[in-house]
Length: 322
Image 1: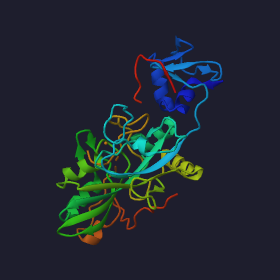
Image 2: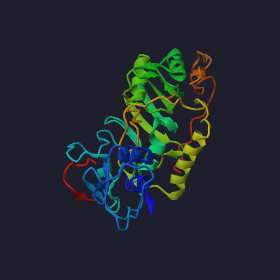
Image 3: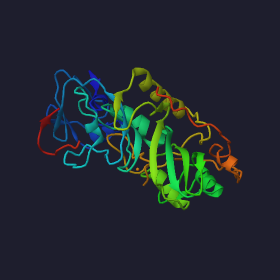
Image 4: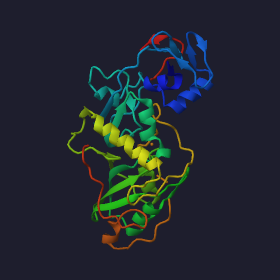
């Protein structure tokens, strides 16, 4: 016997918390009867579970975890009527089953994207309240000022409120263009692009290079591979460390528990940071020199970048089997 919310999470429907909401909302049927009691246990071998007309298999598929170097022009959706290239279709593993993206990168953005069949894993890695850091390589036209860099580090005001601030390292700065490495913890909708617009710059290129300890180095654009058990455990360990109150260097200790904007695919947030899918103690003003701009976020002068090591659309009504 297993808890019903765990069974739903194991089948990639949603995280356990979101599964509880589906149960309370009368969206889950067991052997044809609506179940609304939390903590209900079922026998997956003998009982049939139906979520919005979709019958789940009695035995969950083996959980799958992939890393993809997403190209521009690819979208993060499971919508079967989508005509643009989808990230899930780039994973050509015949055993992948039903997978979805962990959070999102918008269509124009590139870089590291996780995909999985594990709803709880997706929730723990992508949701803003858990604060798993995500690092981006950002290119903008023109020479960014020290004042603008400092504002990004301290946090700027967006429509949903003030961002938590970011760790910013200036990699290159000339009259023709600037390249920065930016690490955030929140992941609001198109957050990185919106932050730069707020300080007067438009992002021309955005690539996610890292999520927690996992980097994109060594994986060519458009290519994918399965994550190792060690990599999955390292990502979950990062989440547990942050939940216990630890903080990455140069970032706020714990993100505020504010409500987040829309969720991404099944348990994930739109942590795109591609521009328009972080939380903050105020930092002291940084040096106005280029050297100061290369310091870490907030008041800490972090001079080193994080290592880049590699460590459905459901149809209502029709009953179809997974």
